[in-house]
Image (cartoon, rainbow, N blue to C red; front, top):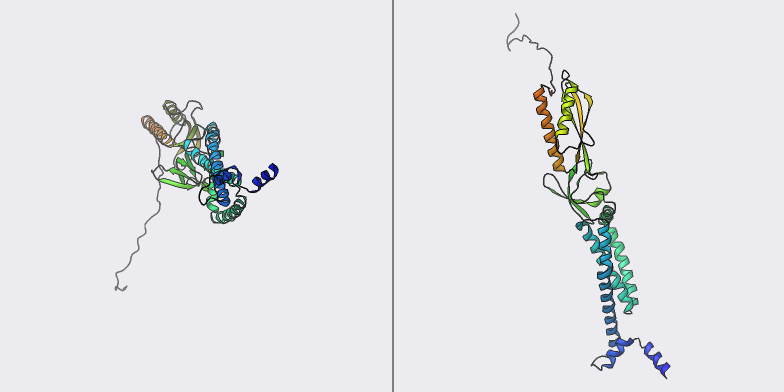
Length: 309
């Protein structure tokens, strides 16, 4: 008798929640309604439990992993958002199974697969930018605040924000560029400040009659005097050009912890100091001179209407 009753209770599909609702004797609550209500309650309980586990365990673990990789807050936010969506999706899938909506879940999975294929074909560029954004987060070719250049130097600026689809760059003319991430990963990108120091080169042209050694000493001395130019590696000068009107002395010097503004200011101050020393020592910085040679020939033309005698 007990075995038959147990088999009957197991076969009715109500479960303890459904049987409890049926035994309440509420109006309009029969076995089918009780079973449906029980399934909904199981769905909500499972989803709530998984969501709280994700919020209390999974998301803090992901946050600590991102902190260990020293990702900026702006870089962490999109990844944490994806983690929350993943926890929610996993919770919904498990809750459907726990509630006994297996057939519904299979149908939804088929519809979702077809929809994903259609969306994927229509959003190839978006997906490409998304994948490129993931590579930017993992490879870290630049960080927020870095000065970068790309497209053969056509574009340059300071990185203000990095998301999974676009990167926002502030140009040095205070213009905001919203750049698809694939543009930054499919071509050569220059990050001059990644190494912590930046080497600069500048060519000083002096006259052929000027003393090369004296000019070299002035160029090196002014580099050593400037507080923002590094002593190690030491500044150096090389004769690199013999132009039409000048001798080119290339100065090479290093700037520590550079930014675009620091680099422009430091180079300007340094070149100005060298120019002033050249003026004091009478060293000329020649400019190209073009000489036009030739002659003028005048022709003896008779007035119109006059005939030769």
